Amino acid sequence: MNVAETPFEFVTVSYLTRIGNQSAGTLAELLTGLEHCSDASIFHHTFQTLGSHHFLTEGFSNDFAQWVLSDTNRNDLAEQLAALDIRDYVSIAALRSDLCRVVADYCMTYPHFASQSALERFYFCESVEVTVPLGRNARTLDEFRQGIALLSHAGFYFHFISSRLRLQLRTNDFSHWLADGLGLRTLAESVNNIDIYTNTLDSTRAKLLRLIDRERRKA
Amino acid sequence: MSEVLALGRIPLDDYAELLGAGEIEELRALATPLLGRSIQMVNSTAVGGGVAEILTRLVPLAEELDLNIKWEVMSGGEDFFEVTKAFHNALHGAPYHASQKDFDIFLAYNEKNRQRLPLDAEFVVIHDPQPAALIEARKPGANHWVWRCHIDLSHPNRTVWDFLEQFVSKYDGAMFSSPEFSRQLPIPQYLFYPAIDPLSEKNCELEQEFIGQVLARYGIDSQRTILTQISRFDRLKDPVGVIRAYRIVKRYFDCQLVLAGGSASDDPEGAVVLKEVLREADGDPDIKVLELPAWAPLEVNALQRASTIVLQKSLREGFGLTVSEALWKKKPVVASAVGGIPIQIIHKHTGLLSHSVEGTAYQIRFLLSHPEIAAKLGEHGHEHVKENFLITQKLKRYLTLLLTLARGS
Image 1 (tube, rainbow over the protein chains, first blue to last red):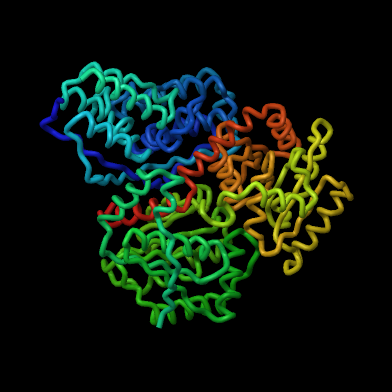
Image 2 (image 1 turned 90 degrees about the vertical axis):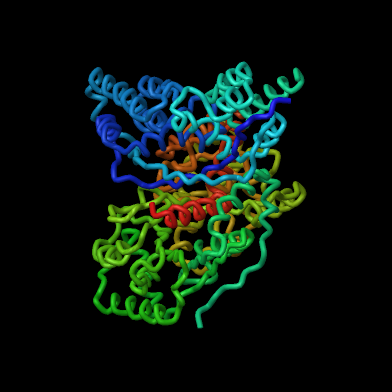
């Protein structure tokens, strides 16, 4: 059995939501907010919201898309915003730029909708992140499997979703360690290909564990 | 001597079955850096009211994590509580002419409590406006103070808010139940949701037999569709609007309506609204208007669990935790998009939002026509509550806040 030189350290994360000073009552105001809000705010409404709504799979992608759909009734714009896949981004700046582009294009094409009042206002918030070690680590695939099975939703989210920004790579902590620590590149890639938009965190974890079990049977 | 409340033990592991062992492990990990550091919760009442109800559960759970936490209650005379009740209503937007005497009474009792309470913990959490001026006891740089506001400050009486703001601005942070309820302040503001306890009598699992007994007691037919709204008899909860929505639904679906709330006997306005409700019901045998004694938590639980759809058609709302109670029981919910309800109901994901009598009726009919969608909304609603609105999540939020304060963010 492969033993990694550098162990995988399991940590967990908790977020405080800080209420920002901006809000939007129209699509034009949403665009202004997107241009000026903090990086922590873009993170909160895209990456973090995916973690806190991990049980939704159909049609929920980020807070901006959800607000556009339910409070401005602009299904076409909502669809475009929902289609922005956070796995394509390793920086908040790039994600912000695309969010702004999509909303700006829409406002330019449909100026009468840009100033139409929404049913409810959108409030820009920020995530304040606190991470703590769980005091567990893994050097083998067996220990790794055991650790993943025990993780809370937040811990799983931290390693599988928000890690992309931390690593600045198009991968996640699990795949990164499987490839670099254990040399299991094919397994790492399969894990990275699990679709977080069409799976809940629970079903993502179940798929990941099945992939690991298949690998263990090979050994 | 200050009044330090001693509370019964609530084993944290009792929650592991509902939440998973990983969630409990996470709470312990977050608490570890806080071990040996002192925390003080201060509010104005030991029993009655939502804050006391939350602290009664939250403090023992924090103790389960071996945290050094104390809950202290400020003291005050009748004159103080009359003034703070008027402040409370004024902060909610009710008309009020504050006099200098009112402010003097408020300040005098806060001063007395500053002398009486040992406000020397590393983290001091002050709940609501009544003890807000205790912040004057803080020695510069000595400890961390945060203010938890449980009320809606979106449209406050200016005079009362200007008076309170001078104290609130001195805290290290303030927590509100919704971004909508917050104010522009020079200190960080955080979102702290109210919470339900899944093991309390109002939310715990019930035997089917007990639920059947409750239905039988009130003449409700368990074999037919049951629409329910649980809330006090208050015009802002729009019980008359609920009946009108029910009548529209009734044209297409056989159904019963249950309107259950606390007894109106000690609430003069509630008694008037109850009369209006009975008049609107007009003797319809399928409308059950129930006055429950002291909110009878087990009966409320049973009625929610027996419901086909739960409604919360409020015209104005605080957070509206009855929505979370229903979602926890996996019930499809149709509710107004007011106050904290849209935080709990993510439209078309964890329930359906409405904006009128007709809209409410339409959403009910839609769910009755599509029971599979209703079931899915209920499932997602349950998960949403599990992730955001349980007492254990509230504890996690507090731990995160204290860690954030400690590291100086």
